[in-house]
Length: 28
Image (cartoon, rainbow, N blue to C red; front, side, top):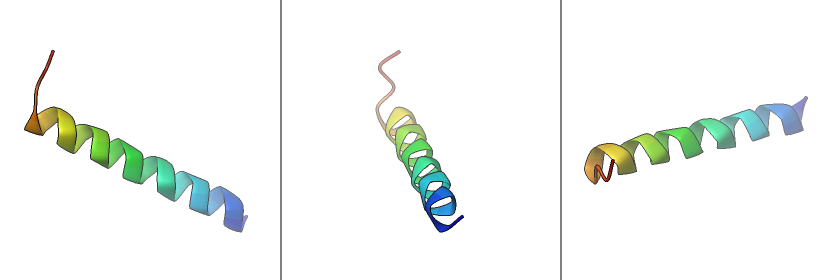
């Protein structure tokens, strides 16, 4: 359970980072 929670948390952090980077430097 702990591992699953930590993995989901890291995934959420990665998504937030990706979104922030995209909004910061839109290269679409």
